[in-house]
Length: 193
Image 1 (tube, rainbow, N blue to C red):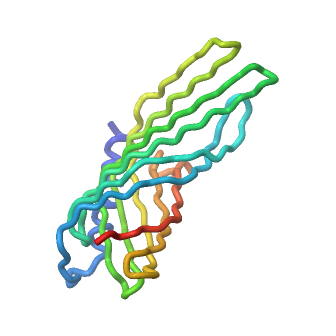
Image 2: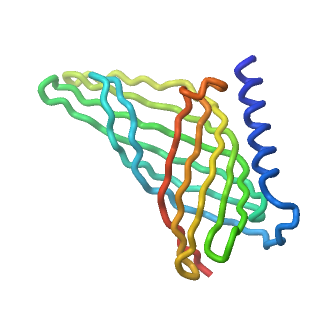
Image 3: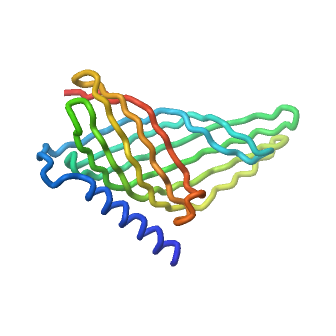
């Protein structure tokens, strides 16, 4: 119960910071619905058969609904990788599913620059399968819930093309910041009329 209370406090603080960072005099913008595909790479720490790091493809989508100043967001991603160790006749397959639900707020700082903040809760689960000599052992972790908060900057280069970069912190054991997980993103956005 204490961990849940701490996570709720972090979530509440993040939401207050999210809304409080924007001026009340920001101009009203129209209600919108946005869908963004997510394709990229993430670096993960693996412990089997020995500790090492690996890059893997992630894919998913983000849905936003609301006004630029305050919108709801839902995001789903999947990271999937397979490693084979022929000398041990061992194959390891990992699937990481993550879902985020929260709020985001965007503010145009100039004609070319947009700042976005976001906060919410992430649910994540790992499915780990080890196949040794054709015998598979599958382990499905329980779903973990953690608050997240992040920021992003967008630089508009053309009327409908924008470069983006941001960082999101997933709070694993607040207030122990050394346990946090950080997601850094670089990408682009194309706006269709």
